[in-house]
Length: 232
Image 1 (cartoon, rainbow, N blue to C red):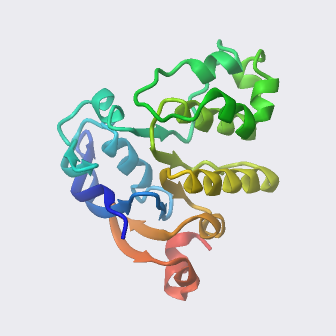
Image 2 (cartoon, rainbow, N blue to C red; image 1 turned 90 degrees about the vertical axis):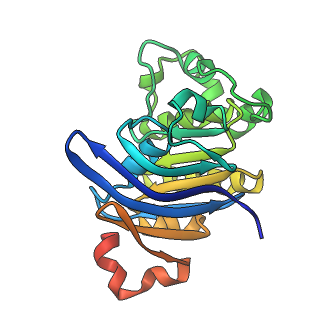
Image 3 (cartoon, rainbow, N blue to C red; image 1 turned 90 degrees about the horizontal axis):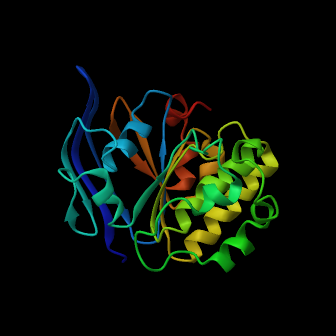
């Protein structure tokens, strides 16, 4: 059995006086693709921000490769090889596609090489001189993912990567996630699209009111009692 590279225990997080996470607890094993499923406001994105130190008001335990990170700043957490691809993608409008792609520094050895990036994302290379925000939504999502692959991060936190995208682009992102898994990446995926999640993930954590209420295999997503949490 693969070892857990992420272990979260009793994670609480706050926005000012609002208590948002109420004891999140879960594990992700090395090389797994795992999803957070749940309705808007369940605490999925907040969990990713708390894990990466982008949300400062947090308490509990977040272990990455056995290293406790709850008191570390975000830049030191990144050095442990964990990177967040946010829902809003974070493409810089004044930079070209190529400049966006090469902006983040490398944080570790073993990142995807420039040749592999060109193979995985040929359309981005073709449009390298274009303004980043002139890309389609799907191309911007691919750019956001490609950008963190170069850094050497091996744990990818992907926040709603299929949101608002056409079905053909969703299929391409699914194929990319599957490819990355074969390359040994560990992926924690926030999704509302349970049908998409079922095609790529090994396990699924159901999140409600800032805590994990169940962990299920893909076949169990069809259970009627889960429909209220999955929006299906």
